[in-house]
Image (cartoon, rainbow, N blue to C red; front, side, top):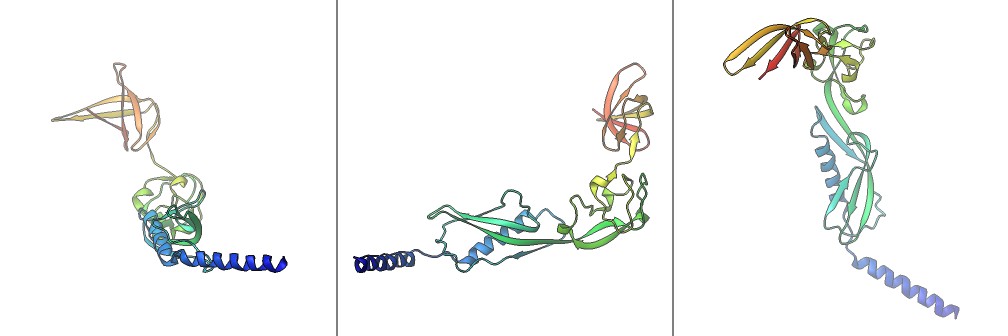
Length: 231
């Protein structure tokens, strides 16, 4: 009885090995190609030079050949820095694997050229350009000087600190109660009058002003106490 059982197990294993041999095995090279292309596409909108380094795929994996590889970002993963990418197959045999990756984004970014005090308005002499991997820096790093010049510092920054969008505030263009000049433009005409600002606003924000006759008009705040109204 034991001999028969052993023979059955041997035959079963041999049959299983034969079946596995008949199933086409998925080459790992296409998996790596679609993963790298996926990450490059995800990082296409980022400034600078993008480089992608993929981790190894376990050579012991026996994945069935896939008709359409589908890369995706697992929940909690991002498309840059140290990350993980999933690749799934739906047909003919479903499977999923996960590949570690490192995405570097080398670019110039702005930093404080000297210590910046809270409330200080940033000028050209206050900023310097550094070069590094944006993926290792906090979100919202400023890469264009126009995003920093004329804005004020929310809290003091030491020299060399990268400038972030959330660490700066746009310069206030209009203050509540201030007399503002309303400039209305349209096809073939331009009208200017005065009013009282009803709220604070930075340049480019919406501000309301009360006209001498009591009418309230909304427009876009401009530096110098100007309210731009278009019709």
